[in-house]
Image (cartoon, rainbow, N blue to C red; front, side):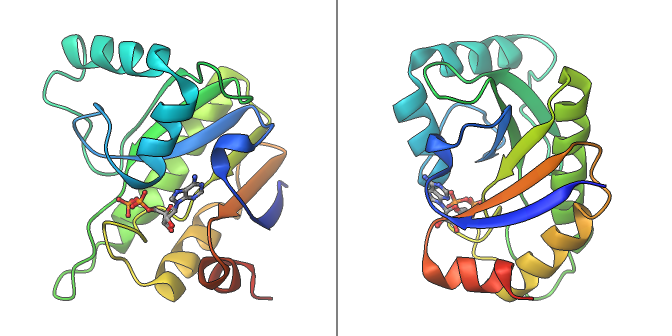
Length: 165
Ligand code: ADP
């Protein structure tokens, strides 16, 4: 059973095997946590993303899928990029948000990673309500195939939603 922990902080500073990126399907960078990872990790990450786009992921990464690259200059060993669903008030996309977490963990475990950090996927630019995202994310990592899952929450509201008992 994995240990699940919650910290208030910046995912780019985590000393874990894998940090998960809330990417967009282009894999070519964006705002929010994606922007921070590319900015601090340096150009090596984007170079690997471009190779993925030139190869197997020619039409981009689909929502819910996950793929790994180097973490460049970051303290983590790898970045696992996943695409969260955009929040919809009319369509239940919970299964896609759960799939992001499960598929990221499967990719991480496949690399031999034991420790994985997640941001609050889909809760920023993709507008998923925090309480709902937290519930889905927590359930999706409950039987994670790694030793440690750390949710790294960027502000107090996210921390409180994810870390509640
Ligand atoms: P999405 O498009 O999946 O909504 P965002 O990057 O816009 O992705 O936001 C996802 C979450 O990541 C938000 O809660 C945002 O506050 C948070 N976030 C932004 N920068 C960082 C960071 N450096 N470390 C951890 N979380 C971050």
